Image (cartoon, rainbow, N blue to C red; front, side):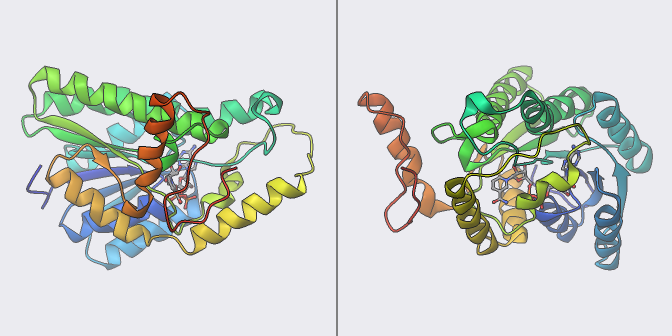
Length: 287
Ligand SMILES: NC(=O)c1ccc[n+]([C@@H]2O[C@H](COP(=O)([O-])OP(=O)(O)OC[C@H]3O[C@@H](n4cnc5c(N)ncnc54)[C@H](O)[C@@H]3O)[C@@H](O)[C@H]2O)c1
């Protein structure tokens, strides 16, 4: 989709971080923007900021884990702007249990998979038929993660691998229609966002207070530091604009980390254990 000026983008999780970075980058291209997000205050601030920058924008309360709310988001966008040309299924959460995967409570699975995978499924089911029906087509961008292409790690990794698989299937099925609707999957490494505070949006449910083992806490602190020093979300937003414009499927934002993908397939092909290998120059204690 080369000409973005005047077109309409819907961004879930657009009130913060990567979503807001994409919203700003789309606004800078002259697009009209709809932010769907569960958090009220940041959503209103995001819309005010976009409007102040000269972007026509609205915000809609939406929990992507609920199909009905995602359909309502689509209807609100169509009512306001008459079409949706770009949908970013971006809302996502990290968190929950820090121990072995068999100890993760069902509630953790339901929350993380409900947002990171079902949220994307809901977006695809609600918006793709509308895009296929419009003459000028559309583009879906699903935010996975580099974790979605690496050896599996925790519920988050499982949800992101599933998001990559869903996106690849979506791309193939869209291509088969012969219509001008396409898809991309965004796979960043560290980006400077509030992802480490994801629990702020977790639905209330009775949960036992669990003590985080010292080793797991040390790993969390390390990741928090890497995220704090991560890529500027607007830089990611501009890379997404470029991928939509040139219809590029895989959006890899951290070239320095690409080596971890080569290492993954080497371990598979050589029959080695599924231990990720950090690329040269990147110090990360995978083992
Ligand atoms: N930050 C990173 O280093 C990084 C790396 C790879 C992938 N990602 C992915 O990027 C996406 C955006 O995360 P971020 O890093 O910008 O974090 P963030 O916490 O800054 O932003 C996430 C946004 O999603 C919203 N959200 C959470 N649950 C929601 C729900 N149920 N319905 C609707 N909105 C909801 C939040 O309110 C927030 O505005 C996520 O899918 C995340 O997994 C982040």
